[in-house]
Each structure stands twice: as structure tokens, then as C-alpha cells.
Image (cartoon, rainbow, N blue to C red):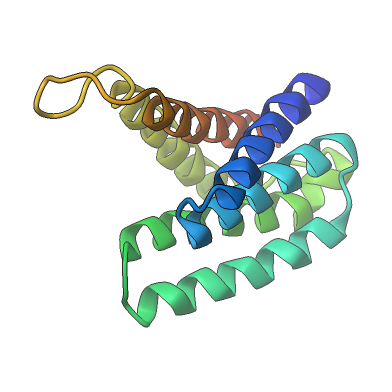
Length: 157
């Protein structure tokens, strides 16, 4: 399963890097690419170093959300995602097979399970009932895939 997760996360990261190069939403695409690469790396090489990198990204996203600007909710979502990545990488459960913090793991599972269902429903149609452009579908599909990946990684804790 870790190889499949790494492939999906790496592919998502590649698409985010492509969008970044094409002038997409710079912060969002860069963050999602980092999350995808980190998820792929964690699936293949579970090291505590990933946790410290994602802890730093969590602090950055929280500060960016607090300072306002565009899309503070999206930044908070990225902060939750990077905090979850840090939690998984730094938790003794990830390295010794012991049970993680059941309440925190459960809350994160609820969050990412709900996010995945919500983002998956957005793949169908826009709120006005019109279909959306293919690039918007791919971006939404990438976000759904990342949510599924986070959910799967949390289940293995």
C-alpha cells in the first residue's frame, strides 16, 4: 500500500508543480506540492525529519492565516494537513507500532474523511449546476486524492 500511496501523492505533487510553473495559485500549489512530496517520502521512508519539516510548514501556514489575506480557510486546512503530517512522522506509533493518541488520531480521521467526501462531491458539478473546466476538475481530484492519502496514513497509525 505504501508504494501506491507514494505514487498517488507523487503524481499529485507533480501536477501541483506543473500548475505552479504555469502561474497557478502560487502559495496553494507550492504547499500542496510540498505536502504531496512529503506524503510520498513518508510512505517510502518514514523518518522523524519529515515531522520537523512539516512542523515548520504548520507554523508558517498558521502565521499566514492569522495575518489574513486571501483564503485564510485554505491556509488553515493546509495547517491542519501539515500538523497531521508532523504528528504522524514524530509519533512513536509511526516508528514502533504502538498505538498513537487515539483521540487526536480519531479527530484527524474525521476531519480528513469529511474533507474527502466534501471535496469528492465538488468533482461532480459546480453550485450553479454547470460543469467546470477540466483543469478545475483535476485540481479538485488532486485535493481529494491527498485527503484520501492522509486518511489512509492515519489509519495505519
